[in-house]
Length: 92
Image (cartoon, rainbow, N blue to C red; front, top):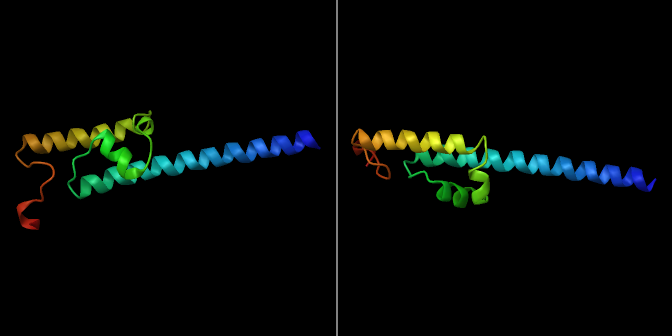
C-alpha cells in the first residue's frame, strides 16, 4: 500500500512538472510574439523578465531558437532602416 501511494505521488509530481514546463515555455513564446508585435527589442533577459521565467529557460533548446529568430528579424529590420523600439510613422 505504501509503495502504491508513493508511486502515485511520484506520478502526480512528474505530471505537474511536465504541465508547468509546457505552460512556462508557452508563456515565453507568447511573450516573444507580443514583444515583436509591439516592436519592443527582444533580448533573452527582457523575455525572461517579461514572461516571469528564469534566464536559464529562455536559453533552453526549443525556446532559444524562437528568441534568436525574433532577434534576427529585428536586426534585419534595423538594417533596412526601421529601428526597433519605435512605431512605424503610420502608427505614431
